[in-house]
Image (cartoon, rainbow, N blue to C red; front, side, top):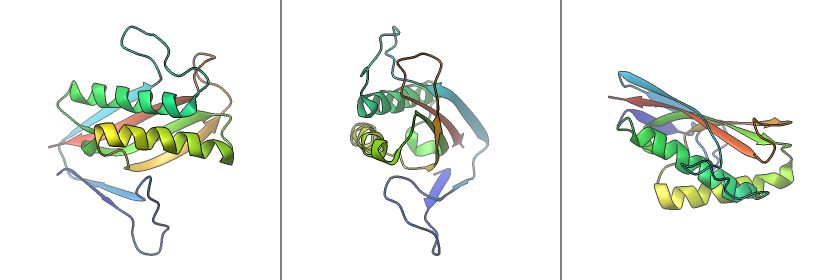
Length: 134
């Protein structure tokens, strides 16, 4: 395994991500921000943060698969959420956990950033990933 995910003693131990990712591979894969669109560009989950989060994670998994990687190879994700508030964390978490149930690991080191807007007005979330392969 090229990525070891840990929650070290002395830091909070969240369920939905890990505080530290140690990557020991030779190929680094950068996946650009993925959003709630199908392969033909059809929007997924208008107004539904959970549905959009799940689709964005699915799109990250598809991008990784194209280079022989999986979500288990992801060391770091950055997630952008429009108008992020504490109340929206439930929708984000629900979508991430639905993706985890379908795809496996989605709990690497993560930075969650609130933004005022994304590239298109209907988008609520965008997920980018960095993976490390042997």
